[in-house]
Length: 534
Ligand code: NG1
Ligand code: ZN
Image 1 (cartoon, rainbow, N blue to C red):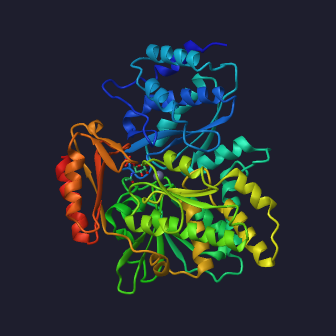
Image 2: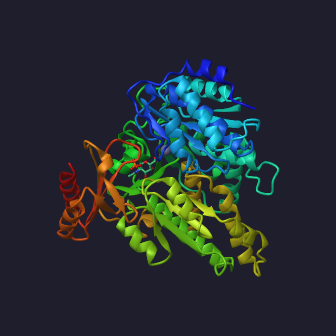
Image 3: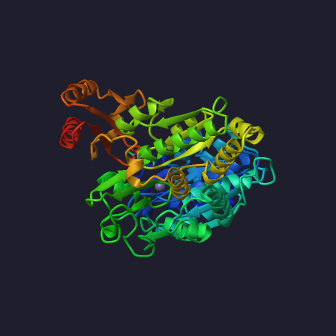
């Protein structure tokens, strides 16, 4: 079977590539202004179909979102059959196809690609796709659908939903009817699976105080409202910032990225959040989660991805001990250079900790090497992975006391409340609430596990961010020559100082991170390092 060249040409001509734009499949897929992404969407539709054919007709996912970025931005990324990010080696093929200047050049590139990858075009192809609430979404999905049609793939529209729901769907579809079945392949199936596990885990525990959920005016609002229904009285969820149709509201002055970057309470919560009460923020596609609370004096405290990792890892270790399985199932942590030094110190005194470069795929792959791998980026993106061997051990373990049996059941229920395909704000929120309920922790008690070092993250716009090259999991620069020596010199002058510089993989900027024992010193160090970069 060969390509349907006429059909591809006819449809591709409806989605011409804009001149003078170079697209790049980065850590978060293609991401830029929604208004220039039409051709990219069409071509991603074709590519997703080809990937499905290459993998023998397994369903591939496509998510249309720009996450925490401003509303006019949009983006697209592919999801592999187990619900994971697209295999690394295909990122360059995605980039090549997206940049073919004309329909003819695109068809030629597809043809060459099919031949080198030995893709059997007679194989079936299935693609499931979803989008967030951005206004540019419907038109971009229409372009994607043209691409799916052009390659002769079968498309399934999962509608408007969160990124983690789409990842769940992909895994559920591909494991249906097997021994690894992940759940019903629908949003209801997802809600049902997670909330049933949550309810078992908190059965008999005192009801938690109501939880404010800042939905960033994005798609998380819709999923949060549904969870509120599914989990009923066990925990009262109060979704706020749910204006998904108000122009300009998405991620604006609210959401996980706002809270993490500005280290402030979203102004819209100022009159609602009471001292002592917990709240959390999701990002625009609901795959990041940040908690916070106001103390008795009304002072804001943030509980970020590092704090979530510490809370959750300690709880799982405790349960493996209580279940008498801690000699067989070991917990490990994966972080990036952005993890707060306070968290790294606290965690590495207790558990194995690995530092990897920024980007979910690096964290995910490193976490797969542990029996139970807990990975979180400081920005609140993360999850927990249980290896297939650990799942087998849990299923086969014979508890010798009722207490062991209870602990074992808790761990098994945790494997179901956790979305193991990708970071999932609402799944992580239920997980955190389980641990807090079991430990009877308030936000303040959770926060006191360790003290965060004051830190500052700044963006620097530079002429060419590609000259910045790093090593040692992005903690040191190898290029431009000489710059790292200058950074080292500066850092030495600050007590508890640490700083690093790396090019962003999602924005045309260089990021500078600094921490120090004192707030003013962390800020000063960040700005002085930024001065070196500029
Ligand atoms: P870049 O732009 O490469 O720093 C950002 C986040 C990553 C990750 C990606 C994907 C920070 C400092 N960086 O990457 O952690 O989440 O976006 O969305 O938060
Ligand atoms: Zn996101």
